[in-house]
Structure formats: C-alpha cells, structure tokens
Image (cartoon, rainbow, N blue to C red):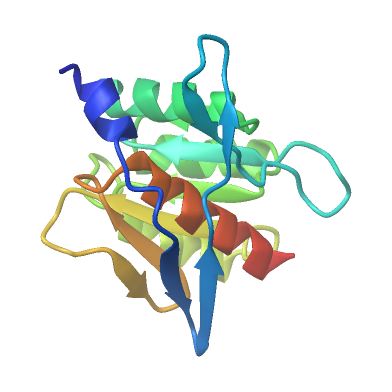
Length: 168
C-alpha cells in the first residue's frame, strides 16, 4: 500500500484533543467523493469566511508534498517551506493563519521558529501545530498540539482545526 494511502487510513470513531483545560471532541464528517469513497470535510475557513492560509515547514520533500496535497484537498490555501529560516521568511512576507512545523530541520529548528513567532508581535497569533517524527507522542506542548508523523492524517487535520478555532 502506498505511503499516501497509509497516511489517509484512520478510524471514523470520534477523536478527542486536549486544548489547555478544555476537552474538545471532534466528530469526523464523511462526505462522498467522486468514485464513492468517503472524504473528511475540514474546517478550512477563518472567521471572515476566507480560506485559511497554512504554512507547512518540513525538510522532507515527500512530507511537504503529501501535506500540501491533503491540506489543499481539504480546502486550505497551502504554502511550503524547506527549513526553519525559509518558514520565518515566508511567514513574515505573507500573513498565514497557521503553521505546521517539523521540529528537526536544517538552518533553524521548528522549536526556534515557534519561539520567534511568539516574540514577533506581527506573528504571535499564528496558530502552530508541531508535526514531528521525533520521540514526542501526540498530545500538546504548551498551547501547540503535537502530532506524530506516524499518526493518521485525520489526526493532523483535527489538530489544525483545533488550533485555528482556538485562535479565532
């Protein structure tokens, strides 16, 4: 089975994510796609009804391509960055609603990018989701959800939706 198909595999059982002191339940909504296969619907618009703009920062080209394809299919406007420095430059150049950050990247780590976002008044409202292959398990680090790369893509979409809702 191709990696992309494995990444799409997930349970249709409701999933929960802890966001601070609030437990948020998300129920995956399946909608038929051409060919009859169900497709998850995402919350892809922001408060003013425009498409949410997402930056994906990962040094692995296959991960960047997979996330760009999946997030675009889910209705997000997606831009990619090849490392932490590239991510910060893109975030400063154009406003984004959220950033999905790999932790271990060349030139600047995802941790450092996150620190820079918190320090910059123009960027501190960018929602962050940590997407990592390190030993961190899915959960949360401070206000940012952490999603293991081994998790189904639905888990990443739910974490992104929670982060965007929290920032609205």
